[in-house]
Image 1 (cartoon, rainbow, N blue to C red):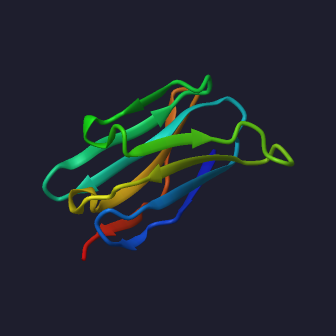
Image 2 (cartoon, helix red, strand yellow):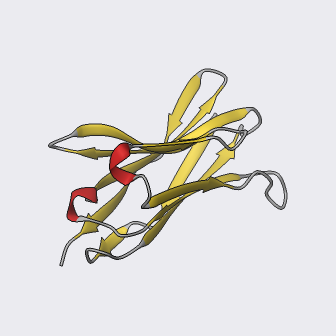
Length: 120
């Protein structure tokens, strides 16, 4: 079983930046793709960005050029894996709850979600 813990959300002004982190622990061996979705009442769930174990990335059109996803491939004690989402030039429409996911052997695990609010 994989446990995911997210951090880094908060309130930021338009044009600002935030960095989200998601750390996977537990049965992290064979974790493949990791990434982020976001959820709003208007758009429901949207894939924001994903990264494969090989480092290939995929972004929603709405965040291309502004968001960057990356991941640690080796932790100090090999007990955790972390994925990051650097969000720059944030817009009010980026306001959402952001959920981290990790795929392992055909099963997707989810984090608890972190709120990102972009407002002046």
